[in-house]
Length: 127
Image 1 (spheres, rainbow, N blue to C red):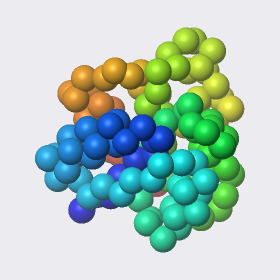
Image 2 (cartoon, rainbow, N blue to C red):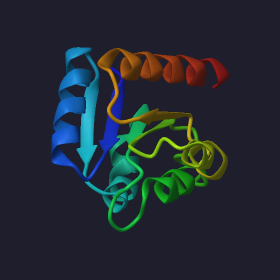
Image 3 (tube, rainbow, N blue to C red):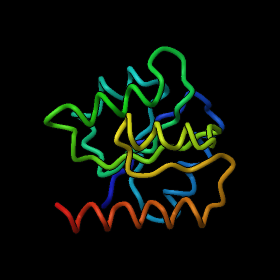
Image 4 (spheres, rainbow, N blue to C red):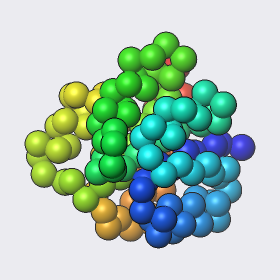
């Protein structure tokens, strides 16, 4: 079963995204901060991470950059899920943080699920 880690400081967002993903058959792990993500990612071993940008402490861009620069986590695909949708924000997600996707909130279930499937299929194909 594909395991997805959701990282967001908003409990309502975590709840909704978790329910959508579980309904689709994904195993879901949640963390409420960038630090929690970095502390647990090795134990959780997710196949994909959905990461909010605007969180207290470490923002999502820093978390993604850290994960992509560590040998044991660099190949985990990351999709940013955020209200930050300006061209600069999208560019920073890809160029600075090396994310694999960037989705704006609010998002339709269909678009989120299609993006997850696309990222997972492309990462498997390149691995």
